[in-house]
Image 1: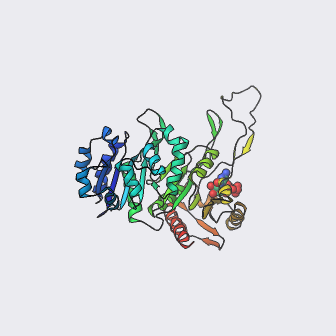
Image 2: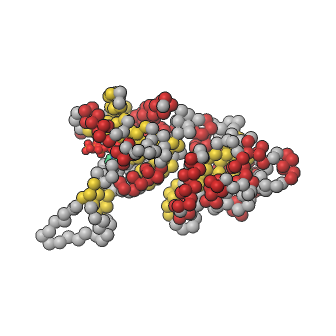
Image 3: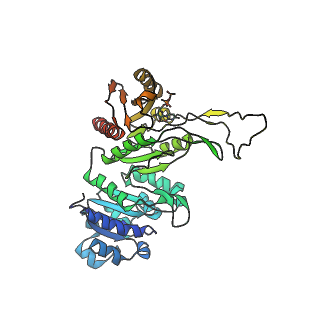
Length: 399
Ligand code: CTP
C-alpha cells in the first residue's frame, strides 16, 4: 500500500503519456496522493485537464508561473514528495537528467529533488539502443536513479523491441518496493534464467529442457524484498515475474552480453541452463539432406558467464551465485565447481531421475559456500526462491 505517500509524477512527451493517466488512477487506488507535472510536449499527447481530473489536483507545467510560485515554489514542489516517478521517461528527459539540465519545470524539479527517483523509460527501440541513451542510463544508475522497464513489444511506431513503457501496475509495484522498502531496497541484482537456444541453421537449434521455473521464482522473490532485478531469460516455458526488468535472449553469447550490460550489480544469480556449445560457424541457409552423407556438426565452446563474472577484476558483484545440476556426489562436485568457477555460492540440486526434480515443481537444494555445505529440506521452487532471496538479503546487509 502507498497510504499517505505523495508521488510527484513527471509526465514526459511521448505516446506512452496516455498510460500515465492510468498510472495516476492505479497509484491513487493504492492510497497515494499524486501531483502531476507535465512537460510542454506531454500536453500534446494528453490534456492537463485529464491528468488533473484523475489526480484530483492541479497539474504543474510552466517553470515561471508567478501565482504558483507564490503558493509553492518549484524547489518546495520537488521536496514534498516521497518519490518522484518519471513516466514516460523519454530519451530527452533522460538526457537532461544525466546532464543536469534545468530548462523547464520537469528537469528543474529532477535536479532540485532530494527524494528517490524512479524512471519508466519509453521510446523508440533505436533511441533506446542508441549509445547516447545507454550512456545516460549508466550515468543515471550511478547517480542512484532507479528504472522500471522498458519492456519488449510492438511499439506505436511499428517497430518491435525494448522501448515500450512498463505497464502501470509494474510501475506501481516498483514504486511500492522503493517506498515501502524491504531488506533489498536500493540493491540491484541480475538473475539469468531458462535455457539458451543455439542455432544450427535458420530453422534448427540446440536446446535443453530447462523450464525457467526456478530462476523466475528467485527473481520474483528478490523483487518482493525490494531489489531492482534485471531478469535475463532465455526462451523459457514460464512467464517472467512482474516488477523486474526483463531482457529476453536466445543464445549464450547474447545472455553474456546482456549480463555484462546489466552491471554494476550488488549480486548476480546464474540460474540459467546455458548451452555449453554452439555451432562453430554460423550457417545462414538451411542444411539440406544429401544422399549417403550425414551432417557433421562442428562445435565451439560458449563463454562461461558465471566464471567470467566471478573472475572480473573490476566491478565484480559482491555476491555471485551459481547453480549446479548433479546426479551423484552432489556435494563434492558442487564444491569443486564453486572453486573452479570462482563464485561465492553454488546452489546444487540433485537431478537424478529418481528425484523427479527436473521439470517438477519441487527442488532439493544443497547450498555450498565458503563455510561448507548446507542441506535444505525438499520444498517447492517458490519456497527455494524465497529462502535464497532471504539469504542474499542477509548476506548483502552484512558486507
Ligand atoms: N553457466 C554459465 N555460462 C555457461 C555455462 C554455465 O553462466 N556457459 C552457469 C549456469 O548458469 C550455472 C552454472 O554455470 O549457474 C552451471 O555450471 P556448469 O559448468 O554448466 O555445470 P553443469 O550444468 O552442472 O554441468 P557440468 O557438471 O557438466 O559442468
